[in-house]
Length: 348
Ligand code: PHE
Image (tube, rainbow, N blue to C red; front, side, top):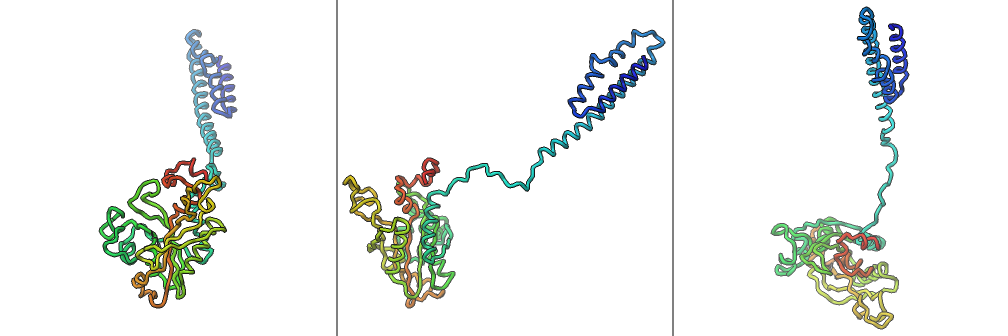
């Protein structure tokens, strides 16, 4: 009986030592210490043995069972540790691998595309791109741009005030003055950026984008303005385009003009089916921007930076990016630019 117990212990110990997974170890445990295994049954049967054998057999079986339990526990610990190591090795993240580009890259918003397209045209003509603050002092937004004290754009009903003398800029023109303070002439810049007005309907949003242009040197004329804008109109709306300058008024340019581009949607205001062109409303001209020769009074504000109104001239223009995109792509409602509806955005 004692020999049999030693056999069972040795067989169990060998199997435990040979187990290479927690699962195999558990099977070995069931086989050697489970409810139907020989060793525990032997222990349970000790009471039926002749009294003189009970002590020795019971002790031996108990020692063998304890020995196996200890071996199983130790082996279990080893296996768990090595299985965890294996798992960690398997799951290790190699941070040096290139990232998987899981998401589609998306595209540029039509307004961004349009802004960049316009920038490219002017960069091609030698202009630099400058940007200015959206929260602006009224000195730059109005005063230095020759707006008189009663100009309606100064009203709180038209313009967002941040403080008594600070507004959300209503146009990109304040950068004309800021840029001239920063560098002496000649200066050839365009200024893209957000502007703000208290307006909201199908053709106005409270925030929109403009691109300002400023060219100042000793010999700039209205003809340069016209030529520059003709080049721009042809690059954006097609080689056949013409431009037309109509007299207008802006406080900071003199003379001031509104600039029209010949309609690219019709012939003489009529569509192929003889109906009136909706884009130019039958006039065959489409207004695209405001412009003019920089008013000498504006130079007066930056005279000390090298802008002597007796010596230099310049032109300026300002256009709405939404308006250009709207015209070029036949967008029906300005608010579509800001709704973030993918069905709209994906068309461009
Ligand atoms: N700032 C003017 C506007 O927002 C546009 C403009 C710019 C006009 C430059 C003339 C010269 O309406």
